[in-house]
Length: 172
Image 1: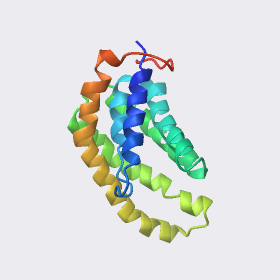
Image 2: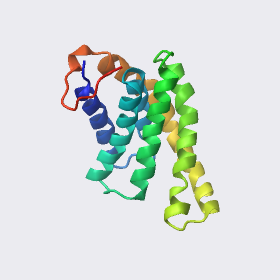
Image 3: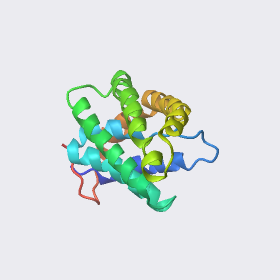
Image 4: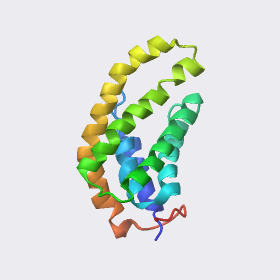
C-alpha cells in the first residue's frame, strides 16, 4: 500500500512544532519522526522523508541556502541509516534512543561545519558554539524519542486507515 498521507502527517507534525514561537532553539522532533518512518518505508522512503522534510520546511520559512543542502542531505542520510538500524530491531523507546543519541551527535558534528565552510566562521568558534546547541538538540532527541516516536509508530505508521497515496511512496 502507499503511504503518502502518512508522510504528509509526519511532515506537518514536524513543521507545526518547529513554528511554535519561543520554542527552545534546536529542540525539534525531526529525527524522532524520521526513525519510526524508517522502520517501515525502505531506504528510498526513509531518505526522502528526512531530505524532503528539510527542503519543504526551508522553502516555506527561511528559503533555501547552503544550510538546506547540508541539513537535507544529513537528515536524508540519517533516515537511510535509521532504516538499516531498525530493519531487524523493534520500534521501541530503547532503540529510538540507541539510534537517536549518537545520530544527533554525528548530525551536529557535520552541520557544525556550515559556519566554517560557508560563512567564514572560525572552527574554534563553531565548536564552542556547538556545545550548548548539541546539548539542547540531545534534550529534544531524548524527549521526542521517548514521547513522540513510539506514538507516531503506533498511531500513524501502523495505522492502515492512513494508507492513502498521492505521492506514490510505497512501504517496504
